[in-house]
Amino acid sequence: MTKCLLCHESIDSRFGWKEFLGMVQEKVICNRCEVQFQLIKGEVCQRCGREWMEVAAEHRYEKVCRDCWKWEEDTEYKGVLTCNRSVYHYNPFMKEVLALYKFRGDAVLAEIFQAELRKTYRTHFQDLLVVPIPLSEKRLYERGFNQSVLLAQQLNKNVSIVEALTKSESGKQSKKGRYDRVDGENTFYVARPEDIKDRKIVLFDDIYTTGTTIRMAAKRLKAAGAKEISSLTLIRS
Image (cartoon, helix red, strand yellow):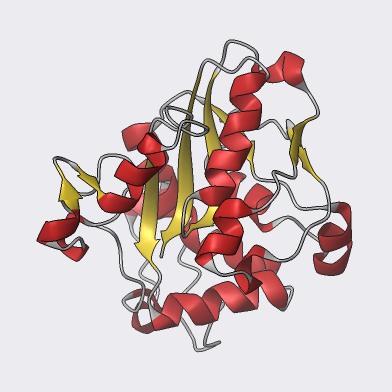
């Protein structure tokens, strides 16, 4: 009997015609764990994908939130990102699971999110080139894998994924405050400009917090000749 990847309890699986024909993905977590993830639903900020109900009335500018409006007022980053869409909220359960995945080496946990990632990609970014956010060489060596690449690989075997970006050393984004992130040096570089020139691109990352990481990467891609850049992230915090 299959064990849940999170709590390691047995999964109550029912095998019917859909499962036999391969129409349904085999469950890798139990229902008790699955219901603790919180999907982003309904109306969202048209730019960053934040659930609209979470945006206070005084922070709404037509169909975008105040943060996105400020980004578009910044001449350095205006227009570099068409939109971001995210799958899950960053609730306490997701925070714990993400820590297990990123910092404790449980790379297999990427499989948990396959179905919902595929659904979001098909809805918003069908047939676009996917470029994962890279790790620096030091961070990649410490972690052993790039969490964004593994998540991107859950989309579909037919989705084109190109690791066109590289990243130099800098402090961990998770340890920085909001303004440190915004004012920090852009450490992304386009390693393979021939792969992204005149292409519509979906940047892929695990989490969208302030939008700084995505926009810094998008700026480099735009300067290297990319036609249009959006992003897909597992989580919107």
